[in-house]
Image 1: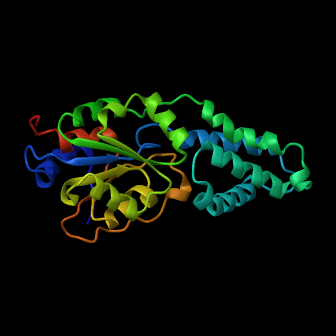
Image 2: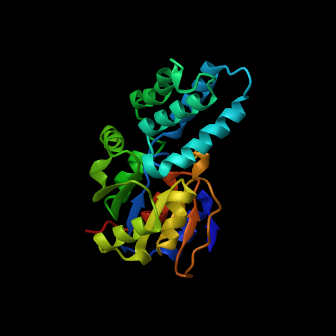
Image 3: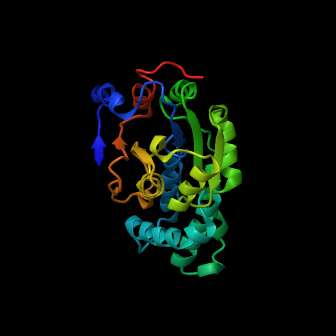
Length: 259
């Protein structure tokens, strides 16, 4: 059942979800759950469109072409700034009258590659929340994308010390979650996926039998958005929270530290 709780209702739901002192397994998404990510891609797209100043195509029309290319390429090229840069290059090639012979093609790609130079900004409350939860529960990090790019962001975040294990996947699917459960011998009844993407975080985790907590981000990638599917089992719990800070009263508010 899908349930949405405000901050005022979290203490009431805590006792219904957890037995006092029961250790849980919490799997966290990274991009746009722990730190800002898509805002850099949105800024790159805006800069790309302004630079193009296309005579015939509107910004919306060019965005549709970019979406089409990203959807076609994500299976083969994956995610991240380098993959995005290639997508911008392909978009430029398609709409340029000169096609692949346009000398500005490499310049188009740079709008994506500059994302690699952006500083990492943790979302509000992330460090404090993880520090508290890590003393009571087992935390995992699950992210997808280019391994080199993701490892660099994890290192820059300073958060890796809170996690028992870090998994960087090419894609997040139901099988991904099932493999994590099997590898780390997790109990699905006490395992939770926490993230901002219905497509990659919430729906496949629920399909794998886990509980899930959806924390929307104002700038989530629109290609990661889809309708959230209700849990298949009545024993599963699905929550929506406004902020990562709201995890603390659920998972630590009425619990004593456990060894």
